[in-house]
Image (cartoon, rainbow, N blue to C red):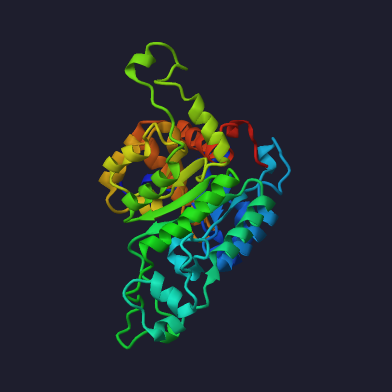
Length: 383
């Protein structure tokens, strides 16, 4: 299918918008001058992400003005406006700016230079390190994020994750004579893992869902979650016990349940959104393992998933379970482009699954509510 307006791919009828289309992942605070347009969007809800120090308070500011927690519930859709659900987190692109003072080995770097030398690959020069700010203690960020999450009952943890390909840009004043804007330096995977783990533990402690970034690191990302899931896996039913009834499992897991309760809150989110999921289709099964103790959702965007490699994307859309599908724009501006991009992805899902558009909108809307609010999401109406 061509990705252009000539086939109506970037439009949807008003009736479909009124059913409730939710953007599962976006960044409108990157363009604050357009934020006042949020109430005019036909999108029902924007799930907006924080990524670094500069935008944590911006996301909170937008949520105070347009958030679902700030809105009065209303069943009159003719008067409703677009609302936002905030997400607070530290993106892997900026993870080098956090100093891990929460490790258990007692070797926290004693200086700025020691920190950046330890967490950046490629032996950064003293000149490059001098352009970077003093790192923020991870414990300080986690404490501040906890307070933001408590201030917004519907807030998520995000955007967090791991990125194997990202290279740090040179500051504008330090671009070399070659004109190259990207430095050879990356954030080590070990450091990215540590920053991610502590944020996932916070999400688990506060029972909040998380929006996850993963680029060329699908195996590493899965390993992080597997390590946090360990000891909390769901029991599997054997073929023999399947014949005995829906509540009869292999062995007696009462002791395991008791142990898990003693452990307190699990060190992982109850629900996970793998945003703009771009792993090979055959990687999907690792996230659909019945033993995973968290609910895993897969979100797709026009910006990342459409326009290249579409054959693989089409296969992915057919393989993801119906109840796990989400849609997103991943855009940095709350513009009409958001609506066009969401229309494209809704239509792609409908075409590949053989669904009517109405069923597609209702399905991804129900899934978004369950991702954000849990199993009771269908009973919640955001104003």
